[in-house]
Image (cartoon, rainbow, N blue to C red; front, side, top):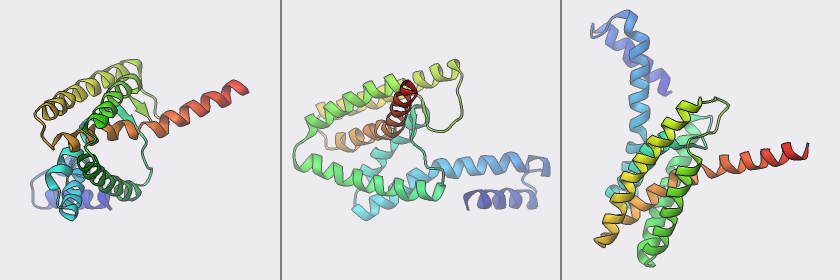
Length: 198
């Protein structure tokens, strides 16, 4: 559906003379990429409205989107399944924020955030599909994921030191990329075990 809509937008741009016919494929891809990258923020706003926590949901989604792009992890093959499961995960994350705040679990969240930092640094980038990355690409993605993570970690700990409740959603958002790496890591470990036995 998203690809079909992106194509329709690009064709409309050709019809109104905004772009030429030979630029159609480029603009179709650009439209698709723009809308696809915007979707997590739209989902965060929708879930935020449902839970009356729009700022918190945006704080969850920020580190998730920016770190995950370079850290990799589990991906669904179906975009629809991805949207549905991501929305459920975001809803659970909102519930998690309430749980952390109500039960004063900020220190426990900080420990998990610290473990997440180590995990992202050690395991990134993780590729869940069969596409291979060169050593240079892996090194570049690890560096970018680590730098982006460092920015969010500094923000998280500043919010914690200032005793601001916004540290909870940011912390949960920092955890999510690592959570989505574990299915792939587990699959790789099981695969290594099977190969050793053979």
